[in-house]
Length: 168
Image 1 (spheres, helix red, strand yellow):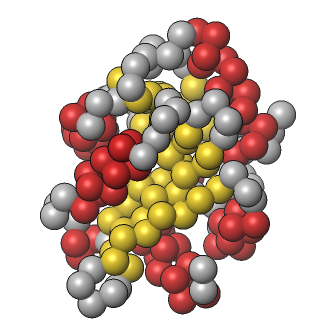
Image 2 (tube, helix red, strand yellow; image 1 turned 60 degrees about the vertical axis):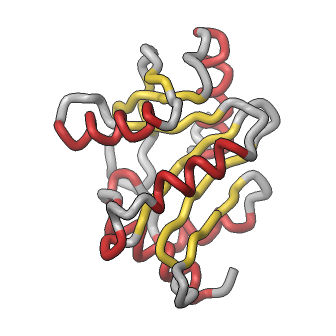
């Protein structure tokens, strides 16, 4: 991945996620060297990058950390197509984090994932801070194709905390 592509991905990330849900530019770029980390991009007919998915590939499951579409092209179905393609190629469970369903936007986001076949899990989960000085972020885990058992959740959460958030 070249510098320009990464800069465009980071610009979409910055426009799509609050500071508490993304790393700094330098820390995000460091992830490119991690063998578990994968960036999937979507381009338009002019070969301009318009969407991306940042995912982690582990032996037991896959974790979608970020999926975002350029604000100028949102609402065109690109995000759904990107996620559907990822689901189709997957032979393992897929996890992702969502906000608690206590705002209309959070409910819409959860509905988007539910329409793709994800299930909202009942377990408590806190995303550790991604930037210095930020608090932990209470979130919910959604999983595809089914709700996790308590044992699966505990194991997968430990893998996330160790490999994605580097806190264990």
